[in-house]
Length: 299
Image 1 (cartoon, rainbow, N blue to C red):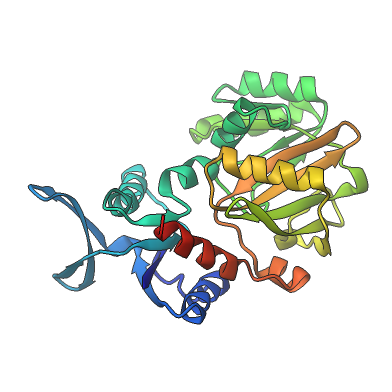
Image 2 (image 1 turned 30 degrees about the vertical axis):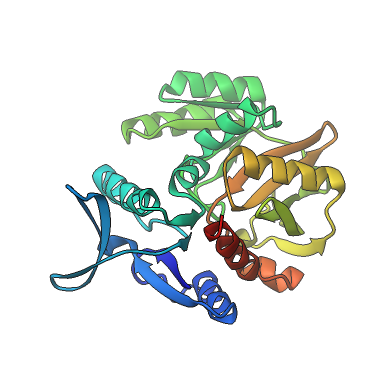
């Protein structure tokens, strides 16, 4: 079986993508790298037909049973964003099973969309305010006391900061408004032990978990936090699985904080980076993801 690996250009050298390609070969199947920038969508009498541009004007129809989707790459324009989303969707419309499917990925890669969906499914998330008014942001920080400000689309804890003074926050939010950026404010959680959990879910089951703690308030390994493998409790596992299912994700890194008031889901990462997780736990998510993709293609 040929199994696609959908990534943007120059990302096939990433450790996670290498793991996926290796896992596909190990399963006895053939990996087919697909550069998302080279997908050509043709619409006509044959319906919606995806092609892949290989060199200059040479194109070939994409005809695969399944593919592992990683991410769409760096986006510089809204129309470019739309092109890449619908390019992957065109392959799904032709019967290809993608893991994760593109529409679930879009929703889960946006922090506001994630928390809205999780909350609608009765999953506890931090108190959050999102809008375009710096007055609303000011009021939220004043209400929350200590707050965390995040970009709607980011990873590795980049661009995330903590603020305790609403008047200081007002200057920050005014700057955001001038850049036409939304204002996303979250109540700061006082986490038990000062860290949080990353629980990796694949195909409706937990394959492993780690507890991460930084020297400061951030728990991102990319920001210097240290991780240790843990055996998740039944409650923690159930919550992670429920969160991934609520988002429609085949695989995800679910970030969960424990407070004196219980667990809160922070994020469901659809493009989970697992290099550090693999080193800490000895578990390679790629092997589980590929097996799940093969199972899905046979449904």
